[in-house]
Image (tube, rainbow, N blue to C red; front, side, top):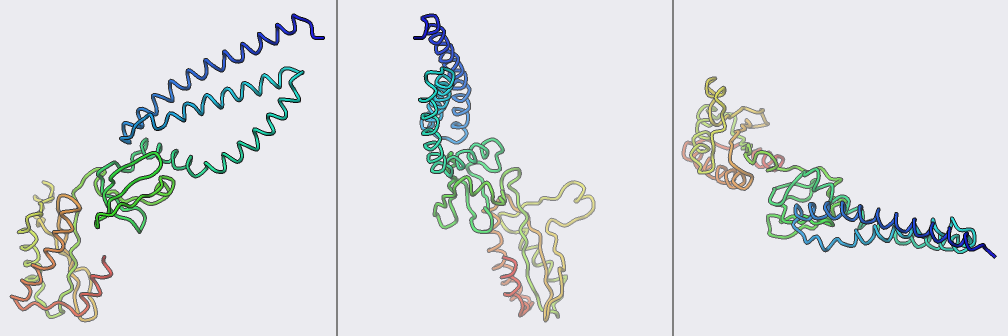
Length: 280
């Protein structure tokens, strides 16, 4: 028989372990709750959807406390060993099943902290997906592409991709307008037409600094990029306010410059279509 004072000591030990576990649980739930509310505001989701995290903390803490109690009381060693073995198998099964989901959640939190993009930004993810960020959840990111389709990418996947963000700091963008003209072309005349059409477009902006103006730089710089078999490649640098305007501006200038060239007798090079396809 175990003396009564030993029973009492074991009871006090169990009470102390449970009290400490309860206090640690309160502290962790408080800080975890603040973190979840802050993350939910940035992600624009309901924080109550992630209360299971706080419940999981309670489960883990009290599970550890139970193991400590069973392992610390000699008469409960056998039961504690069986509990630990069974729990280890269960934890391995649950951990394997939830690995992907947990990875997405952690990646979503990192997206909120480091902010490679925000809702409304225009991004290109890797080489496959381009569009506007419509939503960011703790599991996935939703991108609306230019065909009004929604591309849903798990956060764990998007975190490992190279992301080109067109709006993270400055939405202004420089459009490369590449046009190959015939080798017999009067280059000065062709360059002047390109500049006039570009500056006349409604989306064109003058992005020159005061230093550029003082140096006499033109609002639209046109460079003779290279010589082709049967043509000369010109590249115009045209600035506009954002990526959406950039697409419209480039398409409109392709049309208006071609029409002006036709009026003045400037011929495009036979290599034009090949060059355009390579530049896209």
